[in-house]
Length: 142
Picture 1 (cartoon, rainbow, N blue to C red):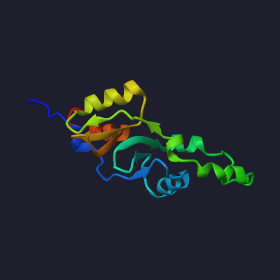
Picture 2: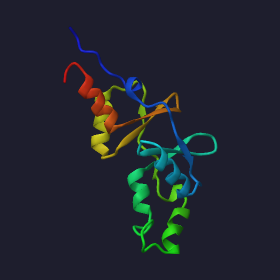
Picture 3: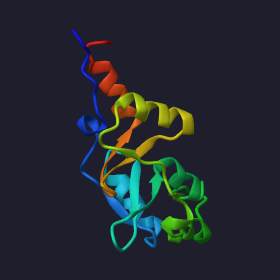
Protein backbone atom coordinates (compact mmCIF):
# COMPACT_ATOMS: atom_id res chain seq x y z
CA UNK A 1 0.00 0.00 0.00
CA UNK A 2 1.52 3.34 -1.01
CA UNK A 3 1.25 6.45 1.09
CA UNK A 4 -0.75 9.34 -0.28
CA UNK A 5 1.31 12.43 -0.97
CA UNK A 6 -0.28 15.51 0.54
CA UNK A 7 -0.10 18.54 -1.69
CA UNK A 8 0.05 22.15 -0.56
CA UNK A 9 -3.34 22.75 -2.20
CA UNK A 10 -4.95 20.28 0.21
CA UNK A 11 -3.90 22.12 3.37
CA UNK A 12 -3.35 25.75 2.35
CA UNK A 13 -5.57 28.51 3.66
CA UNK A 14 -7.52 30.09 0.82
CA UNK A 15 -9.31 32.79 2.80
CA UNK A 16 -6.80 35.49 2.03
CA UNK A 17 -6.55 38.76 3.88
CA UNK A 18 -4.47 41.30 2.04
CA UNK A 19 -3.19 44.75 2.75
CA UNK A 20 -1.75 47.49 0.56
CA UNK A 21 1.91 48.46 0.64
CA UNK A 22 0.97 52.05 1.46
CA UNK A 23 -1.49 51.23 4.24
CA UNK A 24 -0.46 52.44 7.65
CA UNK A 25 0.36 50.02 10.45
CA UNK A 26 -2.91 51.03 12.13
CA UNK A 27 -4.69 48.99 9.41
CA UNK A 28 -2.44 46.00 10.14
CA UNK A 29 -3.09 46.40 13.88
CA UNK A 30 -6.84 46.25 13.27
CA UNK A 31 -6.42 43.05 11.24
CA UNK A 32 -4.10 41.35 13.74
CA UNK A 33 -6.40 42.36 16.62
CA UNK A 34 -9.42 40.75 14.95
CA UNK A 35 -8.14 37.54 13.35
CA UNK A 36 -6.34 34.43 14.52
CA UNK A 37 -3.42 34.30 12.11
CA UNK A 38 0.02 35.85 12.03
CA UNK A 39 0.77 36.69 8.38
CA UNK A 40 -0.85 39.27 6.11
CA UNK A 41 -0.18 39.19 2.38
CA UNK A 42 0.83 42.56 0.93
CA UNK A 43 -0.36 43.29 -2.61
CA UNK A 44 -0.07 46.14 -5.07
CA UNK A 45 -2.93 47.87 -6.91
CA UNK A 46 -3.05 44.94 -9.39
CA UNK A 47 -3.37 42.34 -6.60
CA UNK A 48 0.18 41.15 -7.29
CA UNK A 49 2.03 39.88 -4.24
CA UNK A 50 4.72 42.28 -3.06
CA UNK A 51 5.45 41.02 0.43
CA UNK A 52 4.36 39.47 3.69
CA UNK A 53 3.78 41.29 6.96
CA UNK A 54 4.29 38.93 9.87
CA UNK A 55 2.88 39.68 13.30
CA UNK A 56 6.40 39.43 14.70
CA UNK A 57 7.77 42.06 12.28
CA UNK A 58 4.73 44.24 12.97
CA UNK A 59 5.37 44.12 16.72
CA UNK A 60 9.08 44.87 16.26
CA UNK A 61 8.17 48.03 14.33
CA UNK A 62 6.06 49.43 17.16
CA UNK A 63 7.23 51.30 20.21
CA UNK A 64 7.42 49.08 23.30
CA UNK A 65 5.70 51.88 25.25
CA UNK A 66 2.57 51.73 23.09
CA UNK A 67 -0.47 51.08 25.26
CA UNK A 68 1.40 51.58 28.54
CA UNK A 69 1.39 54.40 31.11
CA UNK A 70 4.72 55.55 29.63
CA UNK A 71 3.22 56.04 26.15
CA UNK A 72 4.09 59.33 24.45
CA UNK A 73 2.93 60.87 21.17
CA UNK A 74 6.07 59.59 19.42
CA UNK A 75 5.11 56.04 20.52
CA UNK A 76 1.66 56.24 18.91
CA UNK A 77 3.25 57.71 15.77
CA UNK A 78 4.95 54.36 15.12
CA UNK A 79 1.50 53.18 13.98
CA UNK A 80 1.68 55.73 11.16
CA UNK A 81 4.53 53.90 9.44
CA UNK A 82 3.68 52.33 6.09
CA UNK A 83 3.41 48.57 5.60
CA UNK A 84 6.15 48.58 2.93
CA UNK A 85 8.60 49.90 5.54
CA UNK A 86 8.13 46.83 7.73
CA UNK A 87 7.12 43.92 5.46
CA UNK A 88 9.33 41.22 4.02
CA UNK A 89 9.78 42.12 0.34
CA UNK A 90 9.76 39.51 -2.46
CA UNK A 91 8.70 36.57 -0.29
CA UNK A 92 9.52 33.00 -1.18
CA UNK A 93 6.44 31.37 -2.71
CA UNK A 94 5.40 27.81 -3.44
CA UNK A 95 3.15 26.16 -6.00
CA UNK A 96 -0.19 24.71 -4.98
CA UNK A 97 0.97 21.45 -6.60
CA UNK A 98 4.10 21.16 -4.46
CA UNK A 99 4.03 18.54 -1.74
CA UNK A 100 4.20 19.29 1.96
CA UNK A 101 7.74 17.93 2.23
CA UNK A 102 8.89 20.58 -0.26
CA UNK A 103 7.02 23.26 1.70
CA UNK A 104 8.59 22.10 4.96
CA UNK A 105 12.07 22.16 3.43
CA UNK A 106 11.58 25.75 2.18
CA UNK A 107 10.31 26.97 5.55
CA UNK A 108 13.21 25.33 7.40
CA UNK A 109 15.87 26.31 4.87
CA UNK A 110 14.87 29.98 4.88
CA UNK A 111 13.76 30.18 8.53
CA UNK A 112 10.38 31.67 7.64
CA UNK A 113 6.91 31.17 9.07
CA UNK A 114 4.80 31.09 5.93
CA UNK A 115 4.78 30.57 2.20
CA UNK A 116 2.38 32.39 -0.11
CA UNK A 117 0.92 29.92 -2.60
CA UNK A 118 0.69 30.77 -6.30
CA UNK A 119 -0.93 28.99 -9.20
CA UNK A 120 -0.31 30.24 -12.75
CA UNK A 121 1.24 33.38 -11.28
CA UNK A 122 -1.87 34.16 -9.25
CA UNK A 123 -1.97 34.26 -5.46
CA UNK A 124 -4.32 31.47 -4.31
CA UNK A 125 -3.41 30.77 -0.70
CA UNK A 126 -0.91 30.72 2.12
CA UNK A 127 0.61 27.89 4.11
CA UNK A 128 2.29 28.23 7.50
CA UNK A 129 4.46 25.99 9.62
CA UNK A 130 1.39 25.31 11.79
CA UNK A 131 -0.54 24.05 8.75
CA UNK A 132 2.33 21.68 8.03
CA UNK A 133 2.44 20.41 11.61
CA UNK A 134 -1.31 19.76 11.52
CA UNK A 135 -0.93 17.85 8.24
CA UNK A 136 1.89 15.71 9.60
CA UNK A 137 0.12 15.01 12.88
CA UNK A 138 -3.06 13.90 11.14
CA UNK A 139 -1.32 11.71 8.54
CA UNK A 140 -1.40 7.92 8.83
CA UNK A 141 2.39 7.89 8.98
CA UNK A 142 2.47 9.81 12.27
